[in-house]
Image 1 (tube, rainbow, N blue to C red):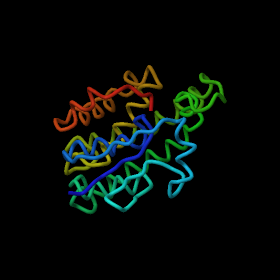
Image 2 (tube, rainbow, N blue to C red):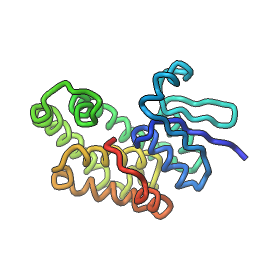
Image 3 (tube, one colour):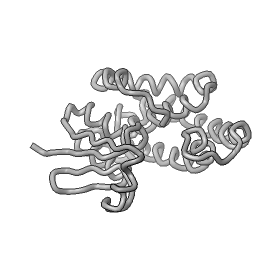
Image 4 (cartoon, rainbow, N blue to C red):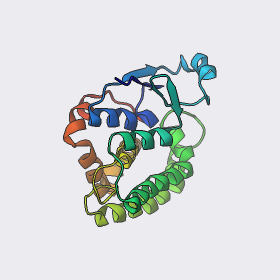
Length: 207
């Protein structure tokens, strides 16, 4: 039997879509969660100085996107139609651009920095960027035949975007009112039978 080991911080973040995919596939894995205080000692021993890290027996895979795609293929969470898959991956990449755009606000709200004025960053960066981006996501989901990012149905990309939405809900008390269709989508993802109980029972983390 293959031994999987995921090493990541004890938060949702980039590691949570991986945890969700393992649970969806009903595949056992070692969930190695480390604290922020442990990271400085562990970091020099890692291949790139970043996490998450997935170990598959005696092999190591780094970079979250590569891990998502690897497990997506492994666990049948990748659309079979090449065009459908490309559209799903495009939706994920679109969020990455948004993440970079709102980074000052995100880092402040996540407690990763004390630089910046919360209200100013919210009004000048987060509001206009999120209005534009989630208008596009509304269009993607509304035109999808499945209600998920891909016409074929639930995919690894949904685990990623749904987790991003949870983080934004934690940071913006008005997010639910501003984007009800997006929240409906996130709840649809997290209400999938194979992952529902895990989602309900997990510990809270802002990101």
